[in-house]
Length: 253
Image 1 (tube, one colour):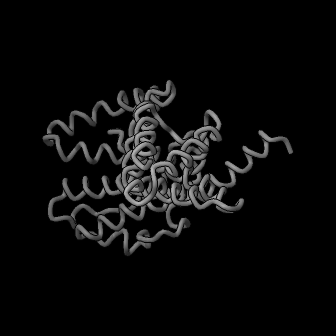
Image 2: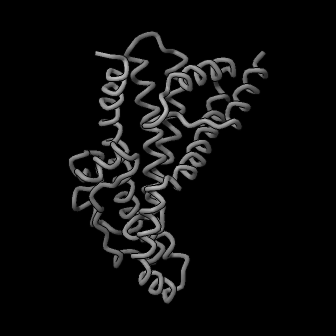
Image 3: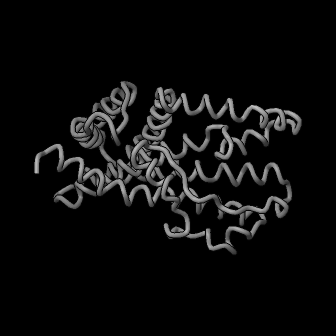
């Protein structure tokens, strides 16, 4: 088996459980938020669970695997059970993307810990899995915050708009959806995903640097920047993050 084929196979094998985890966390967060806000519909439907069988949509699963964004089965919500229907729906919708960003933060932190204690193939595979989870979590979170129905972003925007504006906006959903598809096709969302991903990464680096040496952070980071192939799932890093890591290394000397 050639190196490229082997690498692609390993990435695919690690991506499948990563997708399941990211989607399950996202949908569980929706159901959990709705329950905390007074709606038991998702809980009674068995959707407040990390079991992937309760959440996975085959097409959304495939899109996340191939394109880095996707979706799962919608969580049932009865807005009549919320004390404030608009804000209840907005907070329930927002819980999904927020859970993905938190997942990305935790995955990046664990990645650094694993990389600095890596002694065998299993730990190397685990470090790659954590990078994939982080990258997919960012992609899923950003994708769902786009204000296009039926994505979570449309519910969040509705909470800030007068009701009359929301109705007018719904009339242009087809145009907005067309622009959204064009943005995906031409990669206009890539910059946003990189910006958010780097932001989450910076938070993780700052947090981990409180407990681990700067030199170790630099070493762990540079190894994987070189190892990650272009395209597909990769560790996104900008000049700002490289400078920060270098500063952390200098401070530890």
